[in-house]
Length: 584
View 1 (cartoon, rainbow, N blue to C red):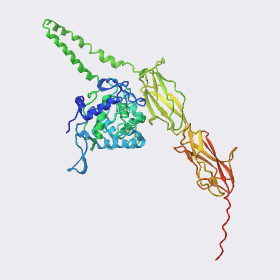
View 2 (tube, rainbow, N blue to C red):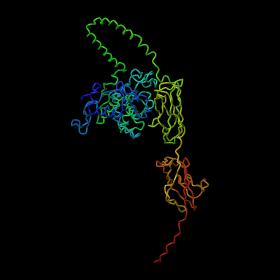
View 3 (cartoon, rainbow, N blue to C red):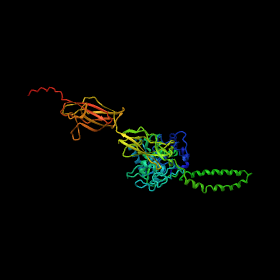
View 4 (cartoon, rainbow, N blue to C red):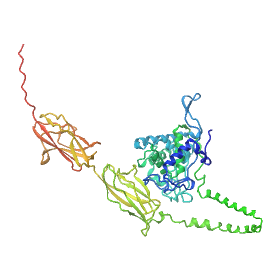
């Protein structure tokens, strides 16, 4: 088996090609001077996942939960044909870590295919999902899943109680993690419940969104990484997406290492036969407070004082160690658990609007204004570091930028959270966005936005050919128009075409040119028309009855743009008949 690089070898492994590439990518993606804290994590202020990362919960998808830190083996995983395996049969080279359990691998690839169809600009590779799945859960603990992709037992991170980890109080009443006090990361992709509430997906078509199902979790992870219109083929967006999943520079380097490794090739192994990584960012413990105790052995350096022979009497002072024994007995254990200091969330009394302007947009357009909310105490004081969840409610296809209907934003030092921009759908009318506090029961704040129909302010005919027809015939040319709004293409704008009585009388004429309905009967008004993606409106063929004269076709769009087109119905010019030939 190829050598496996564990957590203890991480610093020395920087000389390998894989680690070097990861470190180089990491360096390029971090802001200058970013300080790394405990366990290699950077604070949200030190390494922002994106210029506008408002759609993610604080701490990303996982709440910055611990993860596996093992790096890939040195040997290349490239499959190669083997004579013993038969021509064309791939056999893996390298350690077993190159293999991915069959069902888990299928889930990654299915998620890639779905994202390629729904968000092609994201360019999500399944190898990225595999890298994250490896780091988060060791591919569902080596592929220990059922036939439907659900893990045989729940995969839970430590409770996020603030003891060495983020403090995230329960948001799901224990539905996913079984913990009604604090949230825990759940499933093969380690989503915290508050993120799963809006990011969850049904990846296996069973009608459920289960974070413990690898198909659901992989698809949810793909959508999470593809929000904000990130292009994951660009290194900058790739780094931002990974950091938004778990905001740690070490995490970014580890995921990039596995991504590069899997891009070189991998192979399928039976479910349940994969190994589970050993290195953990929390040293395998449930809190990072314990690892800090090894710092105490530095005090034994004081035994150097015995080198002073002149003061042997000082050994009598060891009687004083009886004092250190008393403090640990009762005071520290009882006080912190009983009266923990209030979190910022605990102090929020209400939400207030922070100057949100009127929200209006045409169907299909992005709203130019954004929702701003301020978290306040009972006395009206601003509260920072509070997560505000924005949820689009009701029957509407309006979404936040990135395609989600829910977004969570953390308030800044002034207590204000600014929601991601809204993008209007095709359904017109009022849209309600509700702001609530994550982790605390506070009356929600509703924002009302209005989606108006698509409109055009100009409409012109694309050609100038005279439109003529003989009585009882059909017009050779069809009427084609182009609509614009403020000089730009006005696509999918509704329109109506009517053959009117005169320039001053817009009532429908009873004679002259006409269109045909589905049954071939004459109609002189067409409704439900719409311009195409280029703003073009091509009308159906026109016909003429026996009435001669000049007629008017008037076309009007939503928004009031109007054009009138002349139609001429006249008999053909009489021409002399040919002289009769003499009979033979």
